[in-house]
Amino acid sequence: MSLGWQFFFNQFDFMAKKQYINKNLVKAVCDLLKEIREEDGRIQDDVSTDIFNDIKYNFHIGRLETSGGNMRISTLFELCKSYGIPVSEFFKKLEEKYPSLRINSK
Image (cartoon, rainbow, N blue to C red; front, side, top):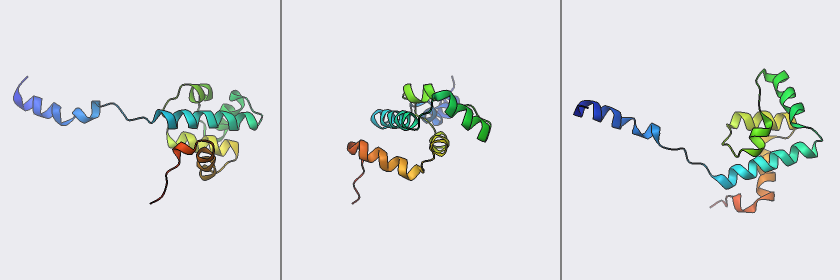
């Protein structure tokens, strides 16, 4: 590979780097979402169907609750909307349940 091409590809090296994931935060979010769903008395399929009927997009709730994947904020918003809980309240509950995730203001 010529030096020119090597320079070109090195410029895009940042794209290949792995995304940072706070595993403790992701697990806490997934666990809390599952807890809220269960408190709401709903099964995963009911939530998926309700969201699909609202926005015409499928969510695999089981994968979100168990895989520890780093979900998009849009997905979290739709789940909170389905559970009837404001996103701000979700994060408040998250901090109450998992104090180690609380950010202390300066």
